[in-house]
Length: 399
Image (cartoon, rainbow, N blue to C red; front, side):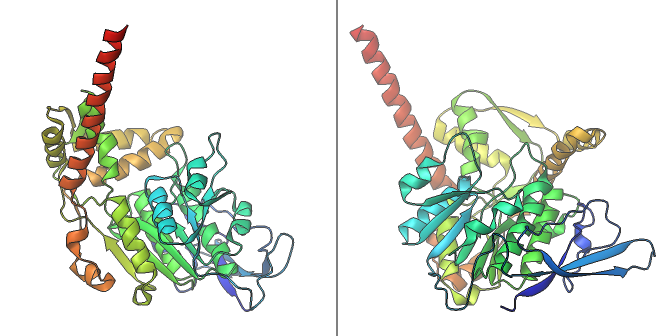
């Protein structure tokens, strides 16, 4: 089975990632952080070392070959893999669960890669999916989850308490390596809009370089960049307004074209079935880009009450980011503040969607607007609150 390619045994620190050499799947020699990512059964069949102009630094490569070995899977020619068999990585997340629901509704055989957790993801099984335990930060757990899989849809991202590199870089590289070695037919990767324009933000830089790594792996793929989820607005603005708590915002005119994750899932599967989309990089954006203040005003209107707004100047975010860099234990906080700073700058996270709609054969009028999404949410939640209040009064009278 001729399936060999060159992969780096050294991985870059954020800040060197944009110097990734896409032609050789190699990275600069002056790296302070490195790790061998190949799982035990994908051992290098040969290795080589090349000197750089600096003389002392070297770049080491390994040839990763899919071959039989301890724990390896027999992928002999002729082994049938159903095109409907998909693996959803990050299936319990905001987007992941919508991908699972959509896939099941459309008749796919869905397997969900879920990290071992105290509270089992029983809702995924209840829906009809198969759940397998694995952890992207432990590459040796990945290969077994890919047996019999045709397509990987990667919705995963690291938890807030984790180092960004652990899952979003090391884990994704390991997943792509395993997918290549085990003959996965298609790989869908979700990224961030404009990630190539912000190398100063670790998460965006890592997303961009993961795109490059996937593109150059040779796997048939689709990359989808996203601007923002409508679901995120609920916890950030809608709930605090209803609970009469502070709503945090900035004084920047950033505009974000939020999209309902149900629409993201629907468009994803349309793209998955469209051969013209193979190998393409798409960006999904909602019908309109909104500032923070406009979103808050919408929520106030539908909630029927004013928000208690606490404004954080962008300058404070910048200062806080620099201060947290002084302490090793706050590095990841600083990384996330860097991302927040971009979101709070004079930036528009949106793209025209007419070309994408045309490619996918989608009518833009069928995409949910933020007004409609929030109106439905507040209508439903206020009705439930009213019913609860009425039941509470009846109980008081009864007792």
